[in-house]
Image (cartoon, rainbow, N blue to C red; front, top):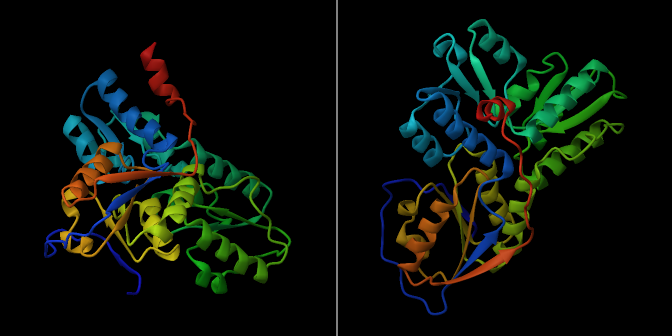
Length: 333
């Protein structure tokens, strides 16, 4: 059977899986929340505690449906732009980062800003500013329109070109081939990014690498874990939302690494028993913006169909923790 990918469409027909002996779940470690997501979500929670509801959040704080709905019930109001926030109110900027123009808009409305941008995204912003000051052409590998890419490109719009995929390399032009550098969105597929870089370097042999790896440690670690378990899996279930770049990438990585099928689900209820028909080995992982409670729900759901043996597949141990934004730390004193 050829590899297939499905985004777990709600309401799909459901069949009863055929029982199979020796069923097991391979559970990827690490998985779920990264340090940047944990920091961003806690920033909204602490803001609600300290300042009271409502607290406004520009865009989704992280790309996860459950997280956003939970925070909304607690009093967070999600908006698209700062002009939707009442003057003088508190607004949290999401983990994906914003362009300088967004900070300017907030200042004009006298908003109390809590910047929950992931520090690893801030690093890429600083790289963009640095190389723009040196008048480089900056080739930003990332998905056109993604909040992180919009924010990074906004740091130096006259110097940044977005390269969405390897095929987009054909359309890239630069002013001086000796002053070209590539940067990347932090949540991309490592393999596809390196293919894009390879093709860019074929076109621009003196292309410079970023000072340090832009794809975040958590994105890479989760992809490595999936690669380790996928060859042993008939099916890989990725817990995550469809607008989460790193979660969608995990589905792709699973298929490319040898899984027969892979599905992306928000909740355990999205699992169709038909997916389990004839399956013996299932891999389970979650994107970097997914709380562990959702993974536990998936494991409980699979146990209902006889997948009671859970075997961890550990490829890294994550200990990184980011401090909360200074606005939250100041409010705690």
